Amino acid sequence: MAKYVFVTGGVTSSLGKGIISSALAKLLQSRGLKVTIQKFDPYINVDPGTLNPYEHGECFVTEDGAETDLDLGHYERFLNTPTSQANNVTTGRIYQTVINKERAGDYLGKTVQVIPHITDEIKRRMTLLGNANQYDVVITEIGGTVGDIESLPYLEAIRQLTRELGVHDSLRIHLTLIPYLSAASELKTKPTQHSVKELLQTGIQPDVLVCRTEKPLTKEIRSKLALFCNVNKNSVIEAIDAESIYDVPLLMLKEKLDTIVLSKLKLKSKHDPKLDNWKEFLGRLKNPTEQVNIALIGKYNELQDAYKSILESFVHAGAENECKVNIVSIHSESLERGEVLSKLKNLHGVLIAPGFGERGTEGKIEAIKVVREKGIPFFGICLGLQMAVIEFARNVLDLKNATSEEIKPRAKDKVIHLMPDQIKIKKKGGTMRLGAYDCDLKKGSLASKIYQSNSVNERHRHRYEINNAYLKQLAKAGMIASGINPQTKLVEIMELEEHPFFIGVQFHPELKSTVEKPHPLFVHFVKAAKSYKHEKA
Image (cartoon, rainbow, N blue to C red):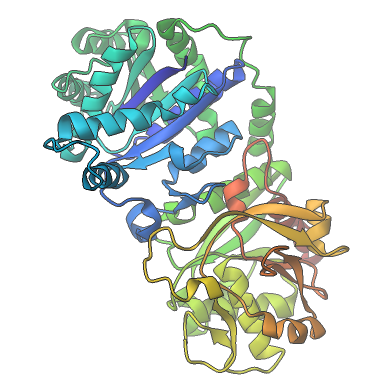
């Protein structure tokens, strides 16, 4: 039977519940236990697929095609195991399920209420993964902050579930903030006391307090928190600001978070923590032998979380190359004002990020023209690939009006067009080409050399594709389709033959890069950037 850990947050949002959950899961996994993490989000959207990146950051896509919260990316990057639809649940999905049951008459005419019907559905979802008999521990992260109205049904579900499970089958961790007042030169515990009081009013007593802080916690502060929050002194965990999110598992190991959890759950680990590979990764990450400057050209640059998986993939690839990757964030709209050459100066590689809509596309096209002509390593993802095809069609094939159907639906040369099975789709949520699909690689191509394989499987999130009617023209001029889906013949990868490193992919490789398995496309892109730097030195 699986054990359950529930992680709540207090005082403020963005404290890092996802990172703490991932760090704990990594430590338990390193002890030989089978662990998974799930995220329950209190917003009413069915999933984050229709949310603007400025609103919620990136939308992470799982192998089975679920559009999920970006925290699932952290779960996969730490645990090196794929998540699924079951790992992310929203209030919208909960209510949708309950309402559908009511419409079907499943409640036999009873009045449908938050308690017990909504909380019962939440509990069912919370135990779904645990009931599959695949895991020793299921960690459940609750989005939002204690005190939010929308979080109340989840807290009530936890209260009920922990009583039903028994004393040693569940554990509650509360992540909170210990602010430092520089004027008074002291850490303050009162916000945490109030947060725990708020949690107690819902009927939940935390077993462990994880305290985010920028200064070390003294013995006196730990004792005070233990006394006023009714937890054991050794269950007050310091989560000091870290240089990297990948330091957190080792910091939590030092604080003995994993041993406290195992003790309270009466669980035995199979062996001591085995973190040699993790430590080696951190060693390479913190001791690079050189550095490169790579531009990330996108349209949502104001919010770092909009490209979270891409940024983390560069961390993984940089460590693999023993190279520090300095990301130069460039807003694509700024390149539409004739600043391309000055903006791309002193760069060793350019990545064109994914996105939707017309805004900023011309700036991306201008940047691609420069990197193509000057031999600068180029990597395009999803929309980045599509913009590369448009640029090549305009400036090499001389199709001056080449464009995407997404931008100009009535254009003559739509080198990028809407996928046929998307034409009649009107609803936006969960209707794109989502999840993992096969890709056959052309023998001898750059892609096949990078992957060291004839076929791969990658995750997608798009409606538009390369128009196959133009493939012969593109290939004749030097831009070849080196990756094709064997079932649908959709183009997955395009590359330039006469270029040191110019590759665009329709899928999202950043979604599969982890600490233990950096994605080969990112690894070789950083390697190409290093080579370019040496050549220009």
